[in-house]
Image (cartoon, rainbow, N blue to C red; front, side):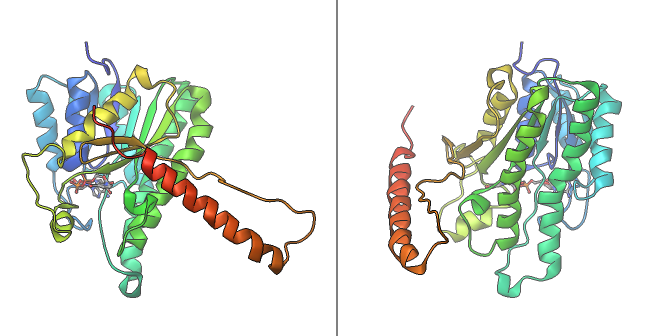
Length: 302
Ligand SMILES: NC(=O)c1ccc[n+]([C@@H]2O[C@H](COP(=O)([O-])OP(=O)(O)OC[C@H]3O[C@@H](n4cnc5c(N)ncnc54)[C@H](O)[C@@H]3O)[C@@H](O)[C@H]2O)c1
């Protein structure tokens, strides 16, 4: 008896990398899975049927799966992905918004197409795929559904050469927080994943940073994200919502969310003199907080 027995899931961008591993884990835990993938290149151009290979792998394991090749980047594509799930399995419980591409450039050199392409797949992709699902949840009063959104340290911490990707990935964390409030009455949880894994998106970046890529090292591989996402979709995570869960390099963590660390109030408009006095206090409080968080967040061995 798997922890997702009887559940029906859609995973976008699941022909390779992290999405593929999530599909295999879902199927092993008893879920029926729609494997979506456009099958394009790393920058989102082109297309192919890589989803078929994952569907075959799942069927070979004795599971049930169906392929979809639509892009997440259009409203029509998002609707098509949802419809494939309904047509194949008659219902839907889980959506993993995983599809992703990269078009790295510093902002000095970034063309409009490099900005728009990233927004289309990552940020608008979340709108395109999630809207049909949440409308279905509301209209059918389908309870206990799950939505998992893929952010990145690029958006949460910042990364050189990725203003487009970082903006989209930070937006995805904001999308999660607001959507979690909207679907709470249907007991649907919405969480953000901050993954880190060696895939075709990152292997060259890992090597450029001077680290050695080892395909046999599970702490580098995309398989480490799959059990975490699977757990968040299980009944054990009924009350876990609006969180950012970090899974990278064999480490599992939870991230802080934006919060006011220290504040002052005044009865009159702020004066420059007051700000001269108070801003250093705020910055000092922030530094103290950052130091504390960095110490508390260091991984503990289990
Ligand atoms: N690998 C990492 O370290 C890392 C870090 C942070 C975030 N992420 C995010 O995790 C997700 C998965 O990335 P990955 O590393 O497994 O990359 P990957 O390239 O191995 O897989 C992404 C898949 O998405 C598919 N895809 C791209 N555009 C699509 C579209 N418009 N419609 C449907 N499918 C599309 C691709 O064909 C590909 O198979 C992405 O959202 C990525 O931004 C990855």
